[in-house]
Length: 172
Image (cartoon, rainbow, N blue to C red; front, side, top):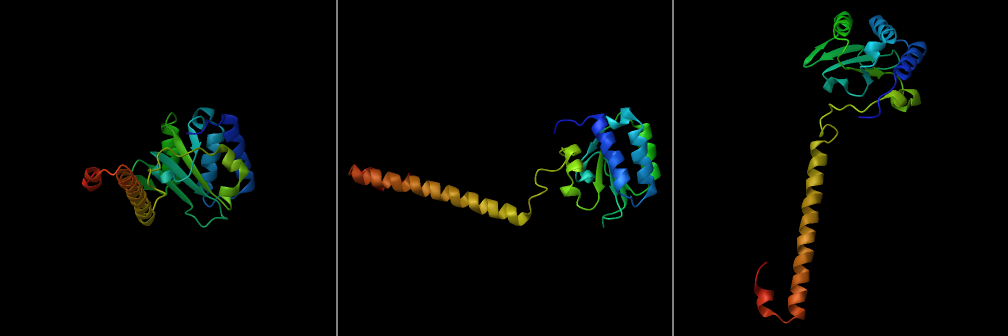
């Protein structure tokens, strides 16, 4: 995971975000304002991508994005009820909370990038398609084949140079 962001960095970003974007659900604004005013909770807040893989995460979306307005993930449960998520945040202040914000050009926003952290819960093969996996296997197989062929040709050349008929005939 990246270097943890300070509470002031997170607080500053949330305030900036609320001043520049209008969220699709007003409860999202309430939650972000609640976080800004509670430092003990803010210490456990992490801004990441793909919160659906985290044990406890929230997706909040601004009007300028076509993504879902709001999702709260807790283990394998998902809800669109912002009040339930707010209740969970208040009751479990010591637990990590992962937040994904969807807004126009979020992946190009320097301020957002500065407080983003790597999501440690994303599966290793999440970004790899079956086709890419098959291509990688073919490349690996071809590389191993070429290596073995090169070694075999080298041994054949060596046997011929040494005029060693037995070594030439004997399989490796």
